[in-house]
Length: 113
Image (cartoon, rainbow, N blue to C red; front, side, top):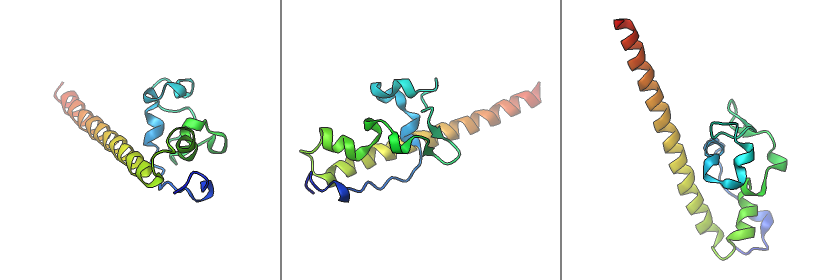
């Protein structure tokens, strides 16, 4: 895919919101951190960005591709980014399972007291 085909670049985002929960990974996004690593513009109910149309360039995968990665074929760039997405999603799932498990242990501990 050529750099001039900006209208045809497609990234298969699943709108999971995981990338918006790891702001500590991008220095450029620190001003959007609500204090716990999650973006202040993320609607956690829908996992949608509240400023999607005016989001920073670092949040726009097509813009990032054109600014920094044009030497990489678009398809390869997408594959690499999907691998990162999957890792972030797995981490979110592990954190959720841990929190659930921890809550069960706390509940059992409180019953014994």
